[in-house]
Image 1 (cartoon, rainbow, N blue to C red):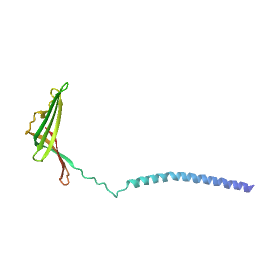
Image 2: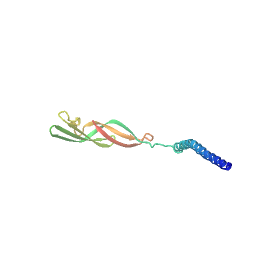
Image 3: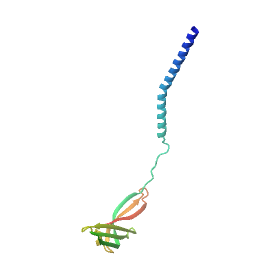
Length: 147
């Protein structure tokens, strides 16, 4: 009889020990998981071996220049109101550039100012230049607007 009681006590102690082991494992597993997650994020974000160097982009500069009108295409029609369309073709001798600019208008006061331009007139225009600042190299130039 003592042997049976002793065996039961031993079994109960083993069960208690197993429960304690499981609770200890559960208690320790939470901080370990947190540390693993933190180390993963730190490992992903700490890559400083390669530094990003942006590629230089050209900057836009503009200025007013004098251009010569080479041709003017004027259109006027009436469809319930007056409609105007003027395309001015210009040339810059200084920059050897050609350009065109179209203006539209409608209504009794909608006639564009460029309607009065004639071939050979010298007018103002806006010159756009894209320049690499480090070298001063002009990438592109265009006549953007005639006024």
